[in-house]
Image 1 (cartoon, rainbow, N blue to C red):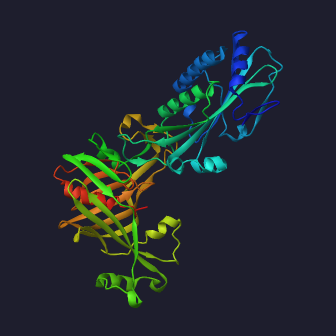
Image 2 (image 1 turned 180 degrees about the horizontal axis):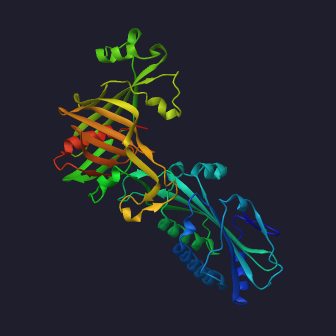
Length: 460
């Protein structure tokens, strides 16, 4: 953290009263403010572009003139110090008493935090009472801190604001980046917003939530197939989602249900022979629980009801890594079903963790998921990853073979195949957010049924 010789940054020292005193001090004369340092600690150097520096410098000069009645001596450059470099890490003391005591000095610091680290540091009763949904959707946090120091080494103004960034849905599609959460042009908007609050003595905001478009990594599969394709947008309210595909459609989904199979004793049920045979062959079957995962869906406008039913083994001897994965031990074989009322519409198998070496992700190049001309290099130029699928569903539906491949860090990309042909790519976790159709003959009925299977609540 930046630190003058006799004091350190305070979270927020400007009250309404001190703001008035500070303004009165500014009115005595047209002060000059020297921008001493802008220190930053971020995985990506957003300040590298000269146009970025110029825009921020000009904006900062306007804010100082407006709110502090002072003149920034040089707005054409940013006195950048990267805290990513080991030699610049740690606090730094400044002594401004040897110079012109009539000149003031500006210090700014920008740091990026992963949400888990940020919220752990904010572990107070007030912070813990904050909306858990806000925590869950936060992708990254930028902290902007400033101090104005006079010629006697006294902090006469300091302020802090945290920008909590979450992603909003736009037309971008593809493999979301796990390294960069904000495009450079978007960071400029964030910086301008943060500085506007930071330099305003009347502002009482120390946290601001901002929705921005996601960042996508380059690849050799999604990019060429999605380029120039029309997107179908979906409206989702959590319990149901609506979209237009020829006509308007509305699908509603229920909360997940869990039904443990009763295999022994007086309560034993007469399950189908193929299920009993599969259980008989399972490892550690005597120490495991076997459970039906169920989720009900309803096509509201067509008055049709559906049920996704998946069979899992909960094996206490298996290390699932995270608790949620304990309910993804899908039994092998076509033991999973989609039912419409009481009729079986589809039966399928589920396989986890399949790698396709022909499909490549290039994490060192990112863009907005729409315009490849907006591609930005973020390092790791030689890094190439194979595309990995979290789940691959294979089976039959309406007398046709189908396949659903689910990929992405949060399992948000779904590839839908019929008879071996790619017919749709949809994006979303437990409901589609937008999708692209490649086969004009794809019926709504089939698309709906594939959506219900691919976006079921159990594909964590």
